[in-house]
Structures are given as structure tokens and as C-alpha cells.
Length: 129
Image 1: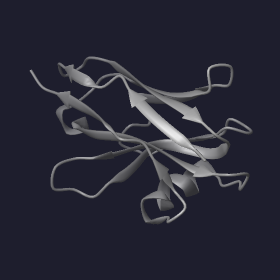
Image 2 (image 1 turned 180 degrees about the vertical axis):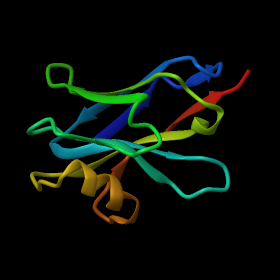
Image 3 (image 1 turned 30 degrees about the horizontal axis):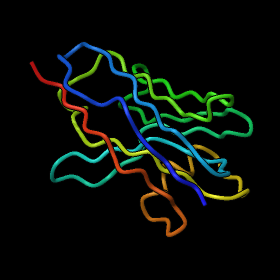
Image 4 (image 1 turned 90 degrees about the horizontal axis):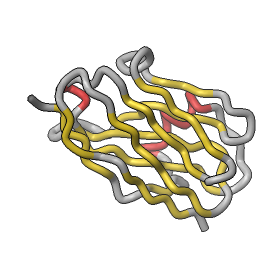
């Protein structure tokens, strides 16, 4: 059974940085960060394959956010730089449990519709002056 616990959210000024961390227990390959702003659908932000390290990020964050994994600590981190007010949302970590492989791009696209997805509880990120 996979369990995910997010941490690291908070309030930051525009242009600032935050680091989100997802502590992972259990076995999973495809994993990523998703966000949901008020009144909007949940969307994939950045995803990574834990087996080969390939990554995907949506265009709106590609030059600002970096997803990485630490095998020793069993964590997946999202480094967010140059934050904008439109990045304000609840950020969730989500994983595809088990040994099934899926490309990060595919996981970021389908996770919100997948019955197999395991989700964390979410962490609030607010970008405001």
C-alpha cells in the first residue's frame, strides 16, 4: 500500500521560491505533483519516473519548476522558482501504485482520472504580495 505525505507549502511573494516534498512509502514508479486552484480542475504539474528518472513538466512551469527524486530518503521534491500569483493552489502528490510503468507525461495527463491513483492530503501554496 502506497502512502504519500506532502510538506513545504506556504506563503511567498511573487518571484520567490518554495520547495515541496513528498514522502513516499510503498512501491511506485510513476509519481508527480498536481495542483488545484479555486474554481479550477486539478492539473498535472510535474511528474517523474522513479525507475529511470525521466521527467515531464507542463509548459506553464517548465522553465521554473524542477521535479527530482531522492532514492535514499524515498522522497520526491518539487523546486519552484520565480513563483507567480497564478501558481497559487493546493498542491498534491500522486502516485501509480505497484510495478506498472508509465511515462511521466502520461501520468501527469491521466492521474486525475485514474482510479488507481493514490493521493496525498495536499499542501497550500499561496503567491501574493
